[in-house]
Image (cartoon, rainbow, N blue to C red):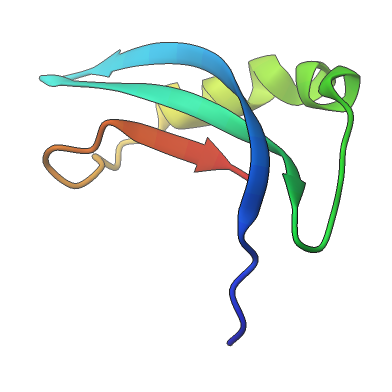
Length: 68
């Protein structure tokens, strides 16, 4: 599978889950798509809610997660 490299991203929020703290970011441009910051901001609260309400933990030492 070919990679879809992230070209640009913006920070949404810093999240604390259990003993983990990480930065949640959203891609605004990859090799295959572009989206405006307005589009990202329209989905921001939903994206944050999905990550915060998930019962899954990220791997240890995760510093950031990027939503595509």
